[in-house]
Length: 113
Length: 112
Image (cartoon, rainbow over all chains, first blue to last red; front, side, top):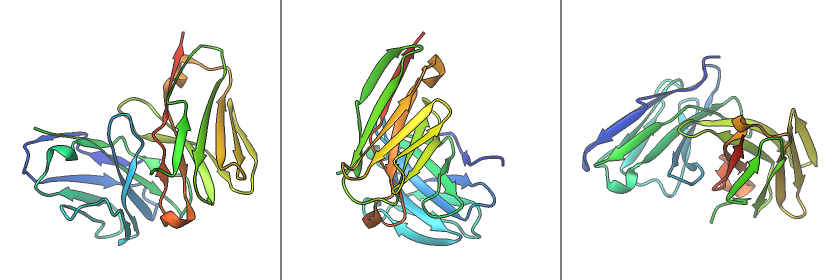
């Protein structure tokens, strides 16, 4: 069990640029979740996958955000035309089944200049 | 509004004392989980309690669940400086689909 891995750990970019983050879940976990966390708040659900199928998306997720999990293993989260309000920590988590404990990566901290 | 709310928002205690954090939620749940987050790191799962359970223990952690009051508490006994972190409850409210909803957390500081 090598844990959930996220890359990069930090990303600094200018407003309007596109960014992509990667998450490698625990290998035997078929569920993968993306969250956004701002300072002093709890993680906010963005979307989740069961294998390669994206089963649920938050209504807060604008159309500038897209996530994929093409082979049911790693996942990517892309933000297009970044805005100042996108600055946050983006967390990925995986679990073996629904309603089971989630294992989190250490996140990607995004800063928009 | 968020499904879960922790109370207090911040707690500062001396090493060796007990720390109690509370979580209230709004709708029916399948289970409730507690997580810890150290600064700049991801969340770490501590304990899961199912809706038909009332109390659960894990080492120095004790979690209670009162579904009639829609509340849970996390007790950390004999706290250590290493327990300094933010603590979050997460609920899988049945009408939130199959994802978890986290509260804003309690920031615990354990002073040596």
